[in-house]
Length: 198
Ligand SMILES: C[S@@+](CC[C@H](N)C(=O)[O-])C[C@H]1O[C@@H](n2cnc3c(N)ncnc32)[C@H](O)[C@@H]1O
Image (cartoon, rainbow, N blue to C red; front, side, top):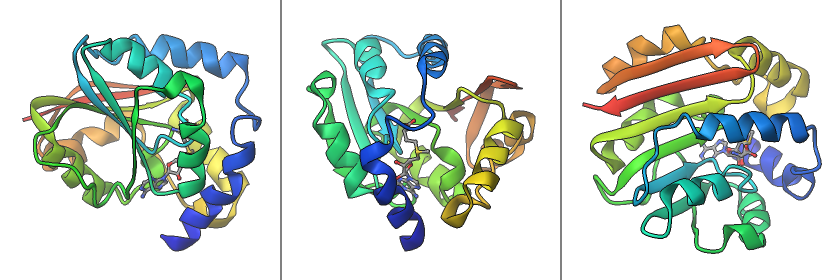
């Protein structure tokens, strides 16, 4: 876990400049519109990194909503908190496997490009705990699972073995963790899993 935290800390300053181009930004814009977020929602951006998805989550939640950014990397959080577009968001340094938030305190938890790095079973348990009944888990990437896993393999080091399961295969662990899968989309350029807390 520490090795992975250091891996991301080292990348924080240049994260936004790395391989994240206009094409990805376009796909991110399109994806967020499919998350099913509503004005007034309280949303956790879990594994927020430098907050690339956060402005869109803030817009979806609207003036009456709230967005909290969580990440275990202090470097990533520092970069995120410097951004003007993220004013209005809250920030918390936390591991996905041990989230320091109250039971039932979120309408939605969004993991954008982050879930494969978590210890899946423990993270799902924590996400379920902090969601209200009927609350929404979103796991999204601007790539399909085969593309994600290839990138991690090529990146090597602490993330080389971090795997995103094909979306159809997520149904079983989600149900086991107390979620009802709503969407399981996995194709080149799009990974979108949405599940509701039962
Ligand atoms: C691939 S980056 C994506 C960051 C951001 N969502 C984006 O799209 O730019 C994954 C992020 O998850 C964070 N992360 C990885 N494992 C984590 C864990 N177990 N708990 C909390 N954050 C974690 C990393 O520090 C990193 O910022």
